[in-house]
Amino acid sequence: MADGLRKGLTSYGDAGFSLFLRKAFIKAMGYSDDALNRPIVGITNTYSDYNPCHGNVPQIIEAVKRGVMLSGAMPMVFPTISIAESFAHPTSMYLRNLMAMDTEEMIRAQPMDAVVVIGGCDKTLPAQIMAAVSADLPTVVIPVGPMVVGHHKGEVLGACTDCRRLWAKHRAGEIDEVEIEAVNGRLAPSVGTCMVMGTASTMACITEALGLSLPMSATIPAPHAERFRSAEASGRVAAEMAKSKGPKPSELLTASSFKNAQVVLQAIGGSTNGLIHLTAIANRTSHRIDLEAFDKLGREVPVLIDLKPSGEHYMEHFHHAGGLPKLMAQLGDLIDLDARTITGATLRDVVAGAEDVPGQDAIRPRNNPIKPEGAMAVLHGNLAPRGAVIKHSAASPRLLQHTGRAVVFESVEDMTLRVDDPDLDVNADDVLVLRNAGPKGAPGMPEAGYLPIPRKLARGGVKDMVRISDARMSGTAFGTIVLHITPESAVGGPLALVKNGDMIRLDVARRRIDLLVDAAQLDKRRAALALPATPDRAKRGYAHLFNETILQADEGCDFDFMRGEGRE
Figure 1 (tube, rainbow, N blue to C red):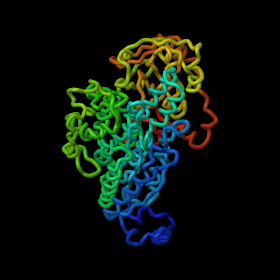
Figure 2 (cartoon, rainbow, N blue to C red; figure 1 turned 180 degrees about the horizontal axis):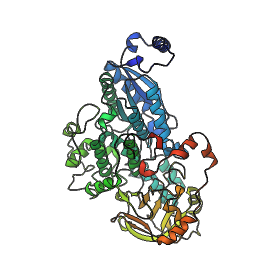
Figure 3 (tube, one colour; figure 1 turned 120 degrees about the vertical axis):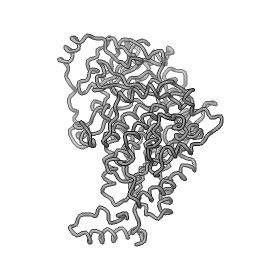
Figure 4 (cartoon, rainbow, N blue to C red; figure 1 turned 30 degrees about the vertical axis):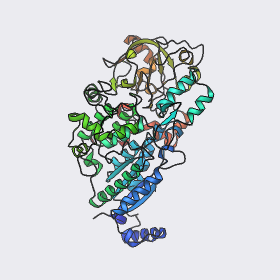
């Protein structure tokens, strides 16, 4: 039997009194003894007026509660931090670990036999899964779902790939103020996450591939009735898990399930952020993400989802084409179909139920991929001793082998001030370099890696340049952009040694990113290097905790004390 209300009693030195007091106070909410004697399913409430991605959460909660009660358990809703990408200063990544800690501690502190976590906006699903892994309570994950598409002048729009594309046109003078304002009201026509393969959609697909959510849950559009029927079904599953006390995340997250997630990440044209988050999740377990193995998978797994920014379609088209079950069916022997899911079924059962949609072209067969290799490549070289990442499925092929002159920006602020200066010494063949934008240096590793094309070049027709940084980039962005250079410059990584005019060579085929300066000269620069002083804001509170314990990108940017067993 589940523990229900008796679980985790408050310590008063008298267990009987603790239960008596708990029941006395909760009865103030109007609950009956029958309700209070049921297994309890906790349900996170991540709704906020600041979070349009999660605008459908109140409806999802009601559907989950309905499913829980129809299955004879007791739903209990509790709030956690809500993080919205475009409203979080300095960046949502800065708050991901705080949300993970908040969610984990609330799961531990309150009596529940299973938990349903509801998330979507970029950092929320990874934070919740990190929490669930550490708490190891039976968990059902519900993504909020993507927006439906928008329209402008007969063109289909998707936030935020088209946000960036059309804003770039505005910067280049091709779209005036009146039109960009009209676009602004049409890019996000409903609540939900970005309807392209950004980080939110990437993490929803990874969650489904890990077996932590119900089939099709990654792709159902946020406003659709199907989203709420899936939530009700998720509540039913959570109730059964509360009664049976499993399966727990530790039983589902195996080496095979993590490999499946990596295969899916490559095949969907997923966000580079997905690799950081998957690494952080794995580090909460006894498993690890091997960057070399991930890169090898990238050479073997083609991109099969024709979705922006790597392709042309949007998430609702992916859904109507059969969703993740159909993709996994197309991936065939690249997926371990014996991996289990929260329902007790295996992925083999899920794939067997995949819908065959005649004429759909959003999910390609393996013999007709969007790209012959996966979304991402892992680079090394003297600029990135511990690795860097490029989403080459969304890059310009002509720039994947390129040597250019470095144009260095010291920080995000420096870039903002100088990138559009008409006197900036820059041309289209140069390599834009941004440093001090990593996990510790920024702080929070902002999505500033998508350096804007300098205005004078944009107005001359330049659409892409090689850009490198220790920052992150939105999964919605297109461009030849090297990210997550590790170690970051703020801790003395080689990126801190680059000077204006140095030559940098990118060779994606050879998986290299190199500064073409001899080792003796780099040693001299390193000896003269002064690391940034600790800012005043990082001397107290959460900022202090973050500054003192944040890990690098290759370790998932978690706090060093949160890693699980098996760490070196």
